[in-house]
Image (cartoon, rainbow, N blue to C red; front, side, top):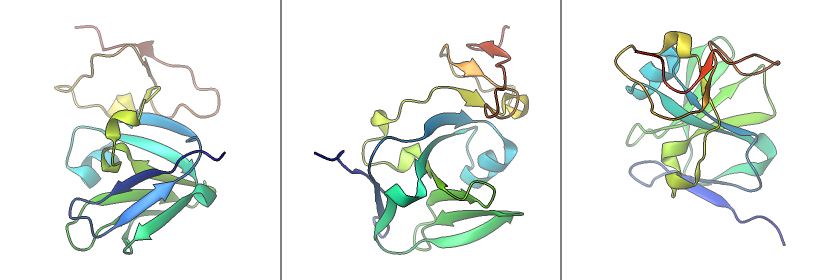
Length: 147
């Protein structure tokens, strides 16, 4: 029996998507680019294999936000949906908040905490990485910053 599909959609419902199988990873990101794209203090990402992802309804529009990066969104309501980076072509990143059941997303770390806003802290014990957690990076700490 195959894994059930995980589904999501934009705010207005014009665009739907689904992926099957286990995600590659789930992370909270504090980088300025993600903050600006979402107008929020951080975002939570789910990375899935590109081959496991499909749009089930509608078509995303794309914004080229930086060299080799495009962000998919709904042209009707403006909801951000995807992040794609040419340097990791086999992955597509989805906003956890766009899932039909966002509570099913369980992040494992925080990344780009060197860009974290000083007035926003998440009270969990997850590891915090200065930039990325890829390539054997070591966390700066576990849990919130000391006061």
